[in-house]
Structures are given as C-alpha cells and as structure tokens.
Image 1 (cartoon, rainbow, N blue to C red):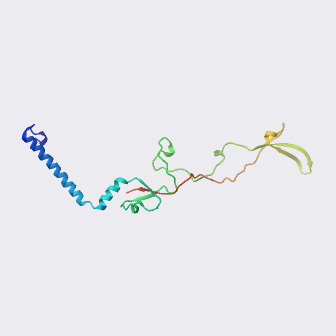
Image 2 (image 1 turned 180 degrees about the vertical axis):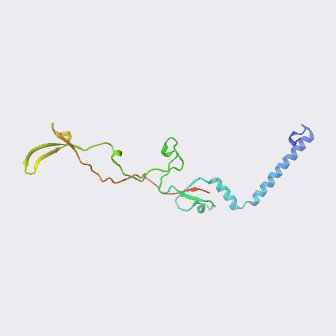
Image 3 (image 1 turned 90 degrees about the vertical axis):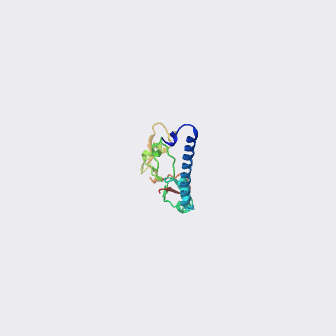
Length: 179
C-alpha cells in the first residue's frame, strides 16, 4: 500500500502525507541548489539568450556585426537574404508559400510577349511625282486621314535593354541563428 493509498483519516494518513510532501520539497530544494551552484552568470545569460533567440530565429542589425559578438552570446549565426527584400509568408500564393523560398529579379528585359499589344499607325497618301526621285507620300495622322489613304505602321523601336525592377529599399544585415 503506497503513501497515497493509506488509511483514510486519522493520524497515520496525516503523517504519511506530511512525510511525502517534505521528501518531495527536500528533493526539489536539493536539485535547485545544485542547479544554482553550477550556473555561472555566463551560463544563466546563455540560457536566457537561447530562449530569446532560439535556433532558426532571425536577427536584424545595421552594424554588420555578427550577433554572437554583438549580443555577447556564444552561438552560430549565418548572414541570409543578402541583396534580397524580406516577404511575409502567404500560403495562398505559390511565390510566397514556402519559408526561406527565394525569387524575383533585379532587372527584367521585356520581350514582345510582356508588353501590351500596340502599334504606331499612320496614313500615307500618294502625291504626284514631281521630282526625278519617284513618288512621294504625304504622312498624316490617322485621325486626319482621307478616304483611300494607305495605312502603315512604323518600324520597331527601342534598345531591348533591361529596366530596373527595384522597390524602394533600406539596407540592413539579416542573420539567422543556426546553432
């Protein structure tokens, strides 16, 4: 019969409960005293910092100093997201649904499939051949074109270079605790 199963009521039950409570309290006191005696200020600080900055957390600073030095905390940090903007996770969008996923481009060269469909129309009306060079055309805006005018479009224009695709930004160091 265990202490908790002792006879109900009476002196024996009370004494058993009192002894058991005292035993548990003494064991807790001894464990706590051992814990405190072995903990140095650095050990206590490390324990607190491990709760504040667990493995996998992100730390942002503008000093460029590794957090293990800046926080005086023996840990391993890796600089992440260099040259990239941070985006919050959105499980409803395939581009942003997975943590630590990367994407996007700094510049983008638009090809014909990425620009709106358009043309640069004009009209050309033949005029009499008054020079030895041959026929001449009178160019007019389509809004002012006469009936029977020959409609034309301009040749392609543009250099095909990439355009800047950067959002406004503020540069910081982003660190991830890895150990």
